[in-house]
Image (cartoon, rainbow, N blue to C red; front, side, top):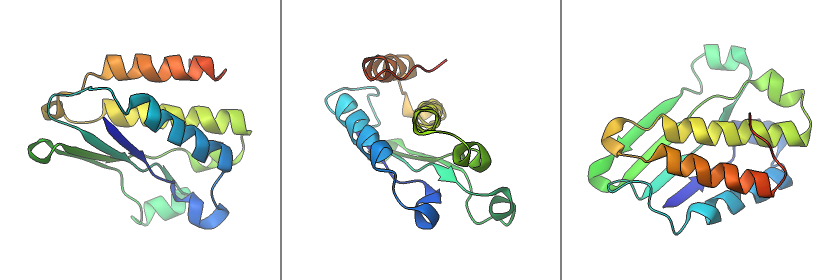
Length: 135
């Protein structure tokens, strides 16, 4: 599967890219590159949203879940709590991003026929090898 994990909306523009998280996301993309998790979805784009509540309340960054099975594509943008993300160390930031990735894949509509369990196992195995433990 082609997995494209984009830089978080809002956060990246305000604070820049966190190199360790960028590298982790590229590694996760490589982990799933040669795998098939759906007979109809071949590319998934994930863009986390990390923005303050007042920005979200203004409607500037909305969560989306798109599944274009006809075209083999899904796109998901889900929120991560801004204050929690700001107040954590790099280890916890990585966990928040990974949880967002898992939640994003799980949220793809049923017509996408995603094998979430297999995806989750592959991601959690990667995490364990990296010393990242997701509850």
